[in-house]
Length: 207
Image 1: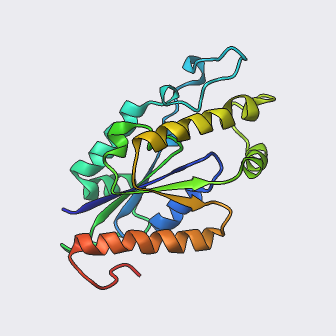
Image 2 (image 1 turned 180 degrees about the vertical axis):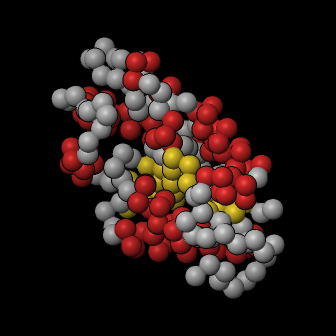
């Protein structure tokens, strides 16, 4: 059984979820595992000296549980998709079809074991001003306290990104200011090239 793992990471509110869902809808035998689904309870997330909850760190996430999900998919992607009902692109079972997992999240490349499982890596980036504006329009539970973006979110993003770039190669950086249609088309085409090679065919397999 052939498998392919696509990582879609990047800054908060950079367009990760939109791109990931677009890919899943276009690709047969595909599903998404989202890092945001694995946050620890608010009561156990540490607080810094300024009183800000440290959500933008791996320690705030149940990464063991996320890894268990990814490993379950790798063991039997067909069963995983059927059980989860995630195959938005449809199910195909011919031998040359590849099962695709899209791993989406803001710290997926900072977790070494998870990063090592990926075949393609994409990172969504947007400028500070745009990111802050988009973040202000989102409703979070718990809500962002005053000064949280400048006091924790953005500085932590810069630190996480620096650590990622030191440890990880092969990341394709994407301009999150481009239209979602343009980004999806480019990434879809890029992923399909590798999947076609894995499938052992030279013509476009996904349309």
